[in-house]
Length: 480
Image 1 (cartoon, rainbow, N blue to C red):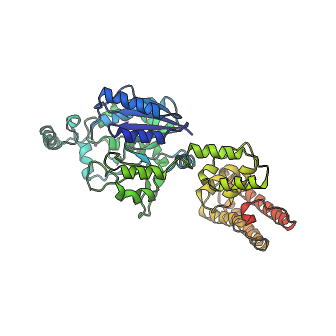
Image 2 (image 1 turned 90 degrees about the horizontal axis):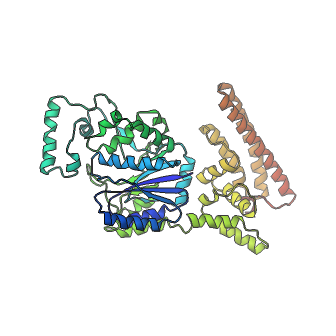
Image 3 (image 1 turned 60 degrees about the vertical axis):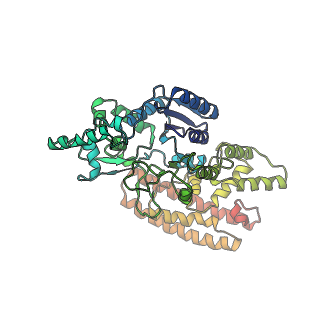
């Protein structure tokens, strides 16, 4: 799976260099837009530094630079420049980011997350109620926004707000043809299909015109396309907040707003470190190496590549190709594999089966049954289908726990007898479900699932007999 990181940057270039180094992997391509307000000399230095930083990924800078102003249409112009340049090379996912973002998870974990959720669109947004104040910046024209930016109380800014009164009197309503208004974050992760359709849609001026002379049009540019079209069913729903039980559209980015109504999110400091470490998001913004270098170093240390990134992958593949010649070498090999994170074990090459791979597979098989690592492992190597309802998952839990919880031969026999009863009960439930469903695809999946359970039961009984004969157990869990 290939990833394109589209980065909008205008300052904090040492932090941008850190971000680029963290994204330097063969499967990544980096596309960077440097604000036109940055002088040509500084731009040349930044470009040279970043190109020298990258060793594995590809890196490109937009041929044209835009003078990006807060709340102005120029933000959309810069995004379109990045998207058009990146989509020409076809990537599986496109990630829109700023130059003051940092990842909160190791690179392997990010890759695994998108592999497990392939086809989803990661866009954060919500529907704006009809009488909400948030509609006003999109209802009227803001002709001087490019010159005003954040400076509302300067003469040109005051004049722009005074022009809202005559627009209200004559009944200007740019949302009249758009009763549905969806607002959200401009930072997103989307598939190639989504980005291609978005560029095609906005290649027509009549679709792009409503965003010109509109305040903060970047907050509705992507969300309006995503939430009002065919992609609304593919938007990723997630429990974004720790103290919130519901699921919301999530772009997997942690953004902290300390002041209500603030134009920009808070800059992270050490007081936010616990929030950053406990977050389940993949990235966070925004950081400052000038103001708070300590929190930047703490985040970088937490995602150190020593055991998670390319170095860890290289170590894993070296272990897979190792052929131990003695018991001591075999024990050392097992200890080395035990120290690797589960995410790396999921990247085992499928073609070659050896002692290292067999041991690593056993380690994953004996993990907690509902862990993401175990589910991904079973789906990849054993063709288990996890797109089942809760009743089927409960039955699946009983089956998978049969091996991982075994400690001795007596417990094995007791559990095996219970497993047979579970099999019979589960098979009976599946027969009931097959009678209630007419869909051929669902029926085929249930038949396949039932066959997998029958195979599992046969293998379990064969393993019992093998242990009774005194043979070496096949899994780590049985050796304990």
